[in-house]
Image (cartoon, rainbow, N blue to C red; front, side, top):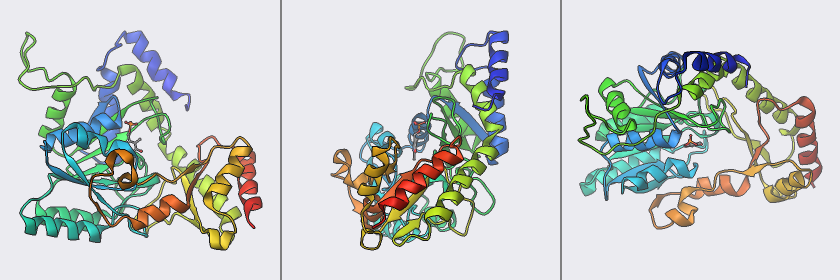
Length: 364
Ligand SMILES: *Cc1c(COP(=O)(O)O)cnc(C)c1O
């Protein structure tokens, strides 16, 4: 927390607006639009809820295919299943680790030839870096398939100067406790389409029709963000730039201390934008480094330092194993060799130093 949050939360208590709506929610949504450049925003109880609403509003239904990055967290995929859709996983590219635009284009072309296009594409902006949006958007436009951006990990990043998440038909963000800014739990849905956000707002509020009595013509959800948490979010949003800088400082330090070691490669920063380095991620080639990723992870764990493997690709998950994956070897290699180092915004120089020293000592 920055300290600013308490002032906004104080206002919530002073006004007695303890509800899943209120002036802090309205202000948070407006300020979020200002930060991301999106026209409309809807504050929600989680990023997962935001993605669920986006998929529902793009019309994903039973049996519909949705193309989605395989290298991601399961929350990018679960809402597809909630709606009865079928995920088709797309491999990563080397340049950004995100969805390979060439594979997306090929898959859309093949689906078009077969006469059954997917209902949506969900592109994930992983670990604080935007996917290569221009060719991805061009492919989606060519085939008339709506693009949904999962920018849960990429608030504060840029693609050609603009925020990833604000390019597609809809974008989603997360304020879960581990994200670059947090409301403990929360999310945001953004779009430039007012009708889309208005409808999402209705669905998120139990789909109440505009009538004085309680009337419902469609199935809704209880997905709105609390006015208290929106106050926390406003305080967090005010320090987003500082948080990005702190994360990038962590990265610069690790790169300086470890970048020269044989077999170590950091996740690249693609030329099209700014990587927030939400997490500092590297790969370890055991043939050059002497030991593999797991040995390094366990060496850190032995010192009570938590480091984690890169996301296990969705096509390798037991729960999604029956769905098709286009490619997959690139993401598998990132998973096999990849390690996320401690990357918190409040990491001290001493803590970073200990991490780097243990990684260095593991080198054989
Ligand atoms: C965290 C995360 C989500 C889900 O956000 P929640 O707010 O935790 O529901 C979705 N996608 C990705 C890539 C994430 O990292």
